Image (cartoon, rainbow, N blue to C red):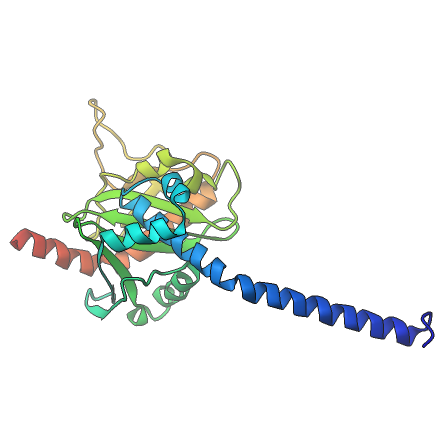
Length: 253
């Protein structure tokens, strides 16, 4: 065959493309198990950071197997609820919700919210963790918020896909921002569950917050802050009846 002909060029190019595609597909499939394991361990470490079993950095140093073992030791129950606060189904204790799975439920909350099945993760020490998911400036933002038995937040951890470094990315990178949520009690009975606003909650002369549920927004990251606020507001409102019932049960006990 004439190696200078157009036919040879087309055949040669086609063969190269097919071979490269096959190699990439094989590599992708080979790494899929590791990718899923990494994603699961990362999700668990985010949940457990929110629940204050350790810091994200500490969990990263532990490695996947140790993170999974720690989670198995601490988790007590996992299940889904609907917006009416009723349990839909129990979850296998090894099941966690990835960002893509949270995205699917987020669509339901914005549409036919009665179809949403929202995960709740309860640890043996009484801490309950729930996820939130929404849109930041450049892509998805999500996170996990941990509550004690009185529905007071004890910790939170947030992540993102592509927010601006040094600005919106601080929802993940700045522990001080996440720590602001600790001690807050969402206003489940009000129209606005949570607010992330410049300056946060006003304080009295002694430095005590006058109004709960207001977190200081990240300077220079208005759109990310608003996106995270909308995500928290939408998801925690969906959990309102579940948390109200849980608090009533704890009060009776």
